[in-house]
Image (cartoon, rainbow, N blue to C red):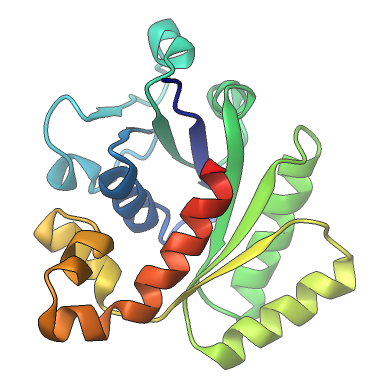
Amino acid sequence: MKSPNFVLWSLKGGVGKSSICANLAYTLEYGIVTNDVYSPIERVMSEGKYLKLLPAQEIPHQVLQTNQGILFDFGGYLDGRIRDAVKVSKYVMIPIIEADDFNIQGLISSIAELSAITNKIIIVLNKMKKEQMTLIKSELKKHEYPYPVFEISASSALVRVVRQKESIKDMARRGGLLAYMYKGVNEQFEQLINYITK
């Protein structure tokens, strides 16, 4: 059965692409390709489940042709590799992590760059408190973007994904305090996953 590919991308670093990517990879049983030289992915994913591209390395042809489900964890300038990944992906998710001017401008610039090549964009408000989410949604409304927005609340869950090497869903399944603590953020990820996989 064919599994769609997805891209997590932003012009700006430090927005939580890799931790979101890791949780999606564990939940969906996907592989990850990253162009980030300093990505923690090799510490999070087992060997054979990720590919870390060198600065000038193209995405291997067989990766672009696969139907096994790949998450492209890409940042920086929208180069040919990122454009190639976008072409073979169902959606591109752009995360933002803070509601300050610097991060909002990074998001707006990322949307402007990406919307020139695709309209399959999803905005992810990552690790935020409600008041920050409200501020960013207001900013997005001013620009009249037609793109869906998903919320991932501030939580220790994504940090734990990286440390525990398992999905939030699996941690919550074990019950007890973790199920209680991660219920909200697990439901938010389920909403995002249901949308991108339907």
